Length: 286
Image (cartoon, rainbow, N blue to C red; front, top):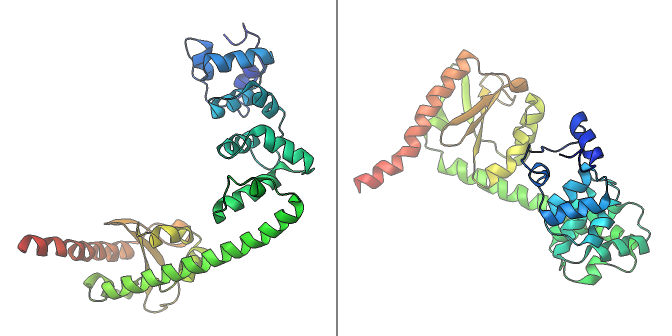
């Protein structure tokens, strides 16, 4: 189908499977490319379009012919799909204005502009204000906002750490009388982390990804416990994730539990289940 209409570059990409999206083997060219008739006509005007041309139209859904022509020649500098950044700007302005501004300000790398935009979005700036979108001196404002963004992230990180540590303190208090938390068997015991840095240290020493679980724990989506050996209580041994049940328990380089650790975890799970079911029993009794 594609060969008959002269879409040779797309055929070549499909055959070589080089950066080629999943094309359905449709009954028509439109089904195969995953586009509508209007988009197909735009490709026909190109003559011999590329896979990237198709992806622009797919992502855009609706797009003016002028914008499509402009995006076809935008280089993916700094981003895998730069055209997506331009298209996303349509919620605030037009693609034409963005392109004109980047050229007028002689911004060598488009990525610098879109990084600047992402900073403003995250910091809560008014993205409808053209003074924010198109500052008179981009280089100066870019440098200023870069410094402001670093401070913003540092402040946010401190707030996250404070909130995380507060949550851990509450968890330790709420579970201080729980049998599972006081479990000590065969020289092993279990405890909650005491602060944010412990999660990072745990992941670094054991070479697993528990350090990335901070946000989930802070949101109450999951709980992380440390299994320690009484002979060396400060040394990371095994890390356990609890989410109504034991989701996973990993040691050094994600190794599986030893028989001893597995037995310990089974008892922990039984006692945690008793603890979590206790309020339900009390409600039924009431």
